[in-house]
Length: 138
Image (cartoon, rainbow, N blue to C red; front, top):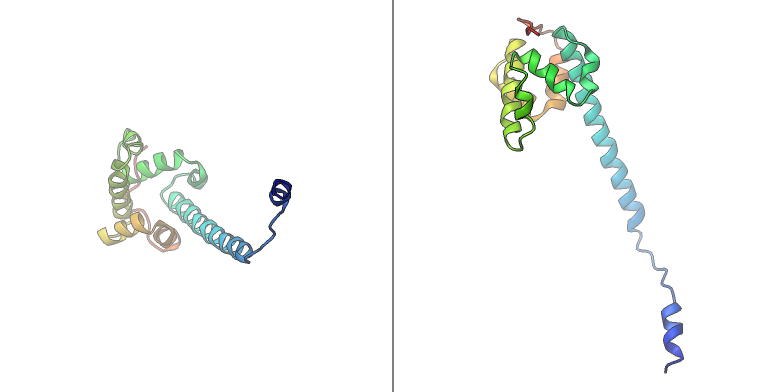
């Protein structure tokens, strides 16, 4: 009995369930969808920043894009500190989105859309025919 124990430990199991290729394909699909959403968001913010008279490339710089959004919204720059606080940042970003929508003569519903579905509403605002009614002062 003692001689069979080492042989049992050396034995390998090579069963496959077929789940691995399915998981890899699902992961790739999720990654492609995520990249498409991020790309839509960047392109939309780029166009909105350009319409507001700000540099479009600011949309791809992580913290600077929030500073530029605050400038477009006409909010004070110290609000960037509020964006660091968890929970508060959602409310602050809602107020910024509402102010950006107001700058482009859009209503509260559009501002809430910018807040909840930015990858849809920023391209609509950027590629639409609406112009900034009042440029934010730097």
